[in-house]
Length: 120
Image 1: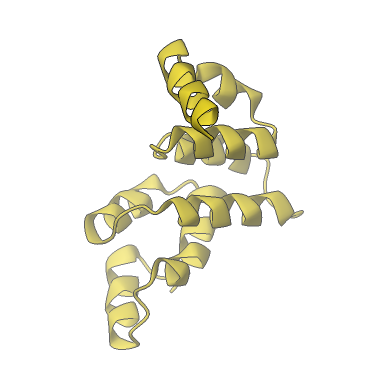
Image 2: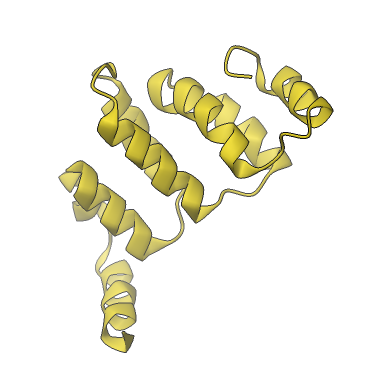
């Protein structure tokens, strides 16, 4: 599935009953984080919802990939822009050392995060 355009990969995935978000982490990592092909992510979003767990797994792969190209950092930043779970976005950005992503969170977003932490 990693080598195919999304629509073709979706046909293969359906044929083999591989439609869990976990089946798509590899292709999304290769196409979006490594390759910067955000149209692939757009196509994915038309077929499946974006899951918080998927972002965590993509971040983990990114963190452990010692052969990733330099431009993958910008792709990871852009990918995090699609993550609506602000506490998770903050955690991933912190774990990956993406300080610019942390700084981009508005004070309003920070207040929500702080309120979530206060409730724990």
